[in-house]
Length: 158
Image (cartoon, rainbow, N blue to C red):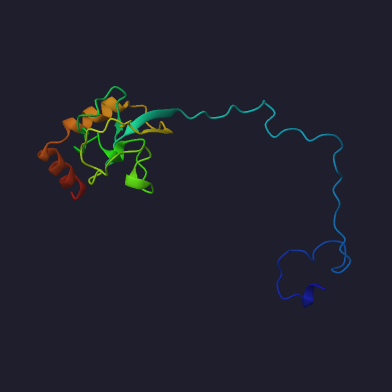
């Protein structure tokens, strides 16, 4: 039989039985319940810390909790007391606001004096141990044009 096979690899035709009778080696089945894979005990779930914070609508910088929304974003300078930063902002509704407002505000990213403003809060995973205030401070400190130029030049050094 080995002579009529085209290839010499071991495979399904090897063994004591013939090719057509379907004989296989039967392993004895163990009696009783299967032991768990990890015999040391159950693993504890990896708990991921989450951050509840407001983020800038323009650059997604996590804003500190006590921040005044009348000011601008420390990273990009966008107005924070605007429709796009509000919890009630919904583009698919009338005047793009969930609350009943008397008149439409034309520019959704411009600062306004809406009494119904509530900052939008997001929940995200905490991937870095650094606080949002420290990140905002580093962003403000690194706004010098010479720092940006030096970083650009370091990318293309030989």
